[in-house]
Image 1 (cartoon, rainbow, N blue to C red):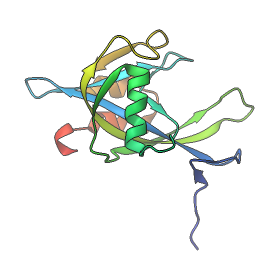
Image 2: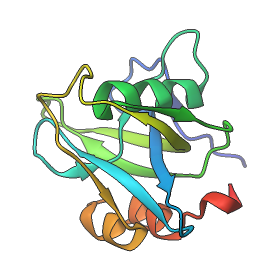
Image 3: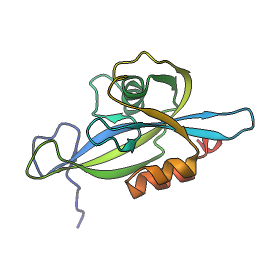
Length: 153
């Protein structure tokens, strides 16, 4: 018997698992070391990767790139390959939280600006992969950040 998970991008059922797309924003320095950009969430101020809901007419990687621009003020390139996924609970003022599965897409940062849509609502900081992993709350995301290697993309 095959069991199908209740995952949907256009769900109206409260029990369904929802999907978001995230950008793993990174840069590589002249010594070949890479850094990962995290932003703070608007509600709790926790360190997170930029992420958001699916967008009509955009691929998951393109939606992740758009979130990177809106939340972190960065633009870059992505190959469209999902690096991994993690899950979390989103409350949205409900009695019961929504279950969210986030697909993570690497984004090689080519531009960073101080003028972006959510600049007054978030902080942003570059971390080594190990420190980025220690600063996020989701264990699955921490593993993705810790193990990420841009050359393996």
